[in-house]
Structure formats: structure tokens, C-alpha cells
Image 1 (cartoon, one colour):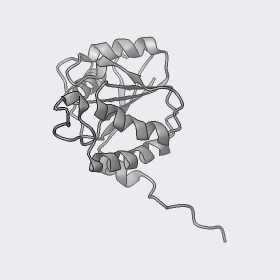
Image 2 (tube, helix red, strand yellow; image 1 turned 45 degrees about the vertical axis):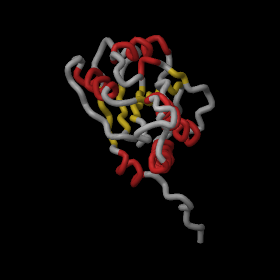
Image 3 (cartoon, one colour; image 1 turned 60 degrees about the horizontal axis):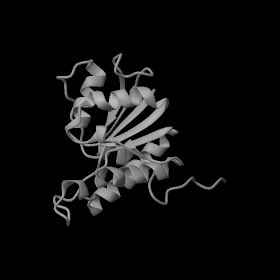
Image 4 (tube, helix red, strand yellow; image 1 turned 90 degrees about the vertical axis):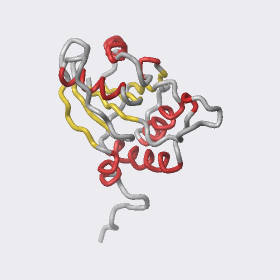
Amino acid sequence: MRLHVLRHAEAEDLSPTGRDADRRLTDAGRRRMKAVARSIARMEPEYDAILISPLVRSRQSAEPVAEACGFRGEMTETRSLLPNADPEEILRELAHLGAQSILLVGHQPHLGRLLGRLVSGRRDVEIPMKKAGLAELSTGSDPALERAELKFYLPPKLLEDLGPRRGAGRAPAS
């Protein structure tokens, strides 16, 4: 299984409703996610599934990635990606999903604990992620049973730098 783990981009400090679940991406967060999405698309992930937390900022972070990657399915909301969820919950869900290439979009501290659990096999290890940072892991069909191999972790600034520039195209043939 190829697993991409993405932390949501910068979100507003307080939503108009006052509810944390309703916090939206800031303008800067939306711009950053578009740039990050272009970089992710260059990796040609061909996602079978995209799982997001029920929080607005998670969906808003996943949408540009889904669009850039040509994902045609429905994104799946799951409470197992909420900020304080137990990483074991999403591992169980992944084992039953039957997908080979998956994008998870969520929050700290959950994603840090999930990465630590996947890489070390232990529950007490955390690998914090920056907002709009991306990790790729390779694991078997049941990630709860074995350690995953961390292929890379890319912070958002590097992802932005790796992506194609807007308006940049190929040089005309001579």
C-alpha cells in the first residue's frame, strides 16, 4: 500500500461560528495548497481513495489535491482522522479499505502519532508534521501488523519549490 499523509494548510484562528470544526483555510493556506497540490500531482499518485477528517479545513486541503491528481471518486470523511483520534482506528480502517494508493488528510497531533506508529511500530513515538507537509509511506495491506517504510517527508516550502510554476510550460521546439 502506498500511503500519503497530508496535514491541512493554514486555517483561520476562529471560525465565524466559533466552532473549531468550521475553521476554514486562510487565503494563504488556499494558495499554498494549490501549489502543494501541483507538486503532489507531479508524483502521479493515482489515488484509489482519499480519506479526510470531518473538519472543514481538511476537506479544503484535500480538494485541490484531488482535482490536480484527477481523482474521480468521492472523498470519504472519517472520524478516525480527527485531531485527537487514536491512530489505531485509521489503521483498522485502512486494512479493510482494499485500496493500494491512499491519501489521508488530517491534523496534528493525530498525524504525528500516526506517523510515529507506522514507522516505529510503537504508540509512544510522534513525528510532528508542518501544515501542508506531506509524507509517503509504503506498507503491507494491513498497516497495523507491520512497520511502514517512510519513503519521504516533504515540508510545504519544499513542496512549493518542487511544483511546476504557473504559466510555465515547455519551451517551443526549434
